[in-house]
Each structure stands twice: as structure tokens, then as C-alpha cells.
Amino acid sequence: MGVERSRAATGRQAERGGRGAWWRDALLAAVLLALGLGSLRWLERSRLGGPFGGPPEGAPIDALAVVLVVLAALAIAVRRRWPEATVVVSVGSAAAYLAIGYPYGPILLSAAIAVYTIARHRRLGIALAWCGAALAALLVHLLTNPASLDGAFGLLPATGWVVVPATIGIARRQVFEARARTRAEADRRLLDDERLRIAHEVHDVVGHGLAAIQLQADIALHLRDAKPQQALEALTMISRASSEALDELRATIAGMQPADGASRTPTPGLARLDELVERMRAAGIEIDLETVGAPRPLPSAIDLAAYRIVQESLTNVAKHSAAPSASVRIEHAAGRIRITVVNRAGETGEPGFGIEGMRRRATQLGGALEAGPTGAGTFRVRAELPLPRGEGEDA
Image 1 (cartoon, rainbow, N blue to C red):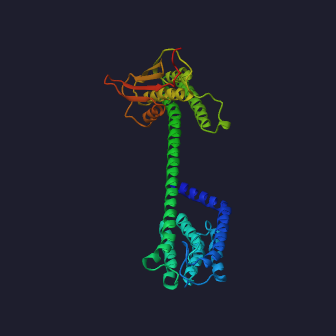
Image 2 (spheres, rainbow, N blue to C red; image 1 turned 180 degrees about the horizontal axis):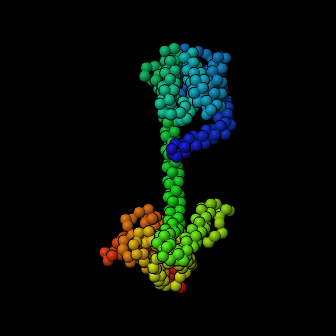
Image 3 (cartoon, rainbow, N blue to C red; image 1 turned 90 degrees about the vertical axis):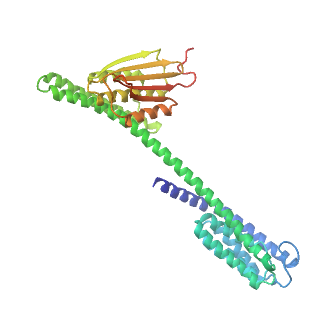
């Protein structure tokens, strides 16, 4: 559907462009008119020589020849808006001109341009039908015009003035349509990529918040009778977790808006990792956090990706582990940052949308991510994100 809409939009744009170029068609019509009228007297005087000449038996140039030349040329002025009418008038005038017996002349240029226009602006089947009719009309003069060429040579003028412009017009249309399809496909891929990016952002924010809320809700339900005070604390944590998740969701959505409407809420990054760990600890997850190397300011895209990878890894621990606990290691190395999250309580389930989202974040930045069981009863997520040259390198 999106590709079809893009094609339709491209067609409407081309149509508007055609209407805006009316003055060029009018200028072309004027040039053809001047050339056609200016050549009539010369054709009358040199009918035995030159590329447009013919035998003396041909009809003499008269007022009717002038009218036909004028009609054939003026029809070109509306060729983009009414291609069919242009073919009828221009080719019809040229066919009548030749059938009467007038010598070959520039009037055929008007017919050729009309044929090109119909082939350029109409679908292949329709274009071929019109071009076939134009060719048949121009071949009539072989039966009526004593000035026509003899034998098979008589087919050359009419065939050349139809086949060549028709071929060029069809080729031009196919190139135009191929470019339109390429643009539509590129637009569709961009739209799909943007939808996937938004889906991953919302999944990371909402999934993390809901996992923390679920843990606290389970605690509240379990302790509501035996330890109501702890149940109340769990409900308080639910309120706090939902509020923080809503704030982060608003910031994420605001960050997708144009710059003039962007939120002033700081973008999540490794500087806020301690807050994330504390929230998860409050939700009942045991977390060991280790930072190796001196933290440095990171490009915003890499900083956000690193934060989201840790966030989604801990969310998976909260969602899938029976006894949730994890270790998080952030290593600031020369030219790269390494992230390792190990769930010490066992596997976190089959890789799903969250893990694919983490992998996509890493690969888009030129890095890599591995996630899976280690064989020692743990599940490990390991990511490596390269830094731009000059970032994260010792002086």
C-alpha cells in the first residue's frame, strides 16, 4: 500500500511538473510553427532536391498545406495535458498533408513529438495502440501521394518518424518508473526502520517498567497478610516505578519529535546507570555493578545504546529468572566500550524481541552483541560498541 501511494504521489508530482512546463511546450510549438511555415516556400521551389524533396507530380503548396502545418505545430502546445488529442491533431494533420500529395517536410517533426509524448506519458499498452494507429495513418500516403518514395523505401519515412520517437518515449517512461519504484522502496525501508526503532525504544522503556512493577506486585501479594508493612512498601515501589517509567516514556517520545519540540529531559546514558541498578535492586534483583577503566563522555547514540542494553538485560533477568541476580561489568577500553551482563541464576529464556533489539542497536553502531547460555548454568549478554576515532583513547 505504501509503495502504491508513493507511486501515485510521484505521478501527481510529475503531472504538476507537466502543467508547470506549459511555457516550454508553447515555445516548442512556436519553433515548430516557424520552421514548418518557413520551409513551405523552400519545399515548393526545391521539390526535386534535398532530403525533403519529391517528384514534381506532388501537389503544389497552397493554403490547405499552411493550415495543416499550423494545426500540427500548435497541438504540441498542449501535448503534456492532452497527449491523445495532440496525437490526433498533429499526426492527423501530418497524415492528411502527406496523403494530399504535399512533399515531405518539417510537419513530420510535430507528428514525431506527438508520438513521443503519448509513449512517454501513457502506459505501454495504450502507448503502443496509439503509436500503431499513428503509423497506419502516416502510411496512407503511400497509396495516394505520387511524391512518396517507391517500394519499401516508402515505409522508411513514416516508420522512422513513429518507431524512433515511440521507442525513446517508452524508454524514458520505463526509466522514470524505475526511479519512482526505487524511491518508493527506499521510503518504505526508511519507514520500516523507523517503526522498528520506535518499537524497540517503547519496548525497552515499557518492558523495563512493567517488569519492575510485576516483581513488586508479586511481593505485595505474597506479604499482604503476613507482613502488611512490607506489602505497603512494595506498593510504594510500584508507584515510583510506574512514575519513572512514564517519565522515561515521555522523554523517549519527545526525543522522536523535531528538534524545536524536543524534551529537555536528559537522554538515558551510562551516567544514569546507578539509578537503573538501584531501581532494579529495589525491585528485588541482586546486582553487582563493576566499572573498569575511567568513564569518559560518550557520543549520545553510543551512550544511549549502552544504557538500553544493560536495561533490557536486567529486565530479562527480572522477567525470566526464578531467583533473579546478575552481575554487570562496564569496561571502558581504548576505542571501544564493552558491556557484559551475566544472569547467575540461570537462563533468561529463548531470545526474543528484546535481545534482537539489543543486537540491532549494537550492529547499527558498528558493534556486535552475543547473548546465550554459557554452559555453566548462567546466561550472558556481551556487547562491544566501537567509539569514533579520538573517543575513549588515552592522551
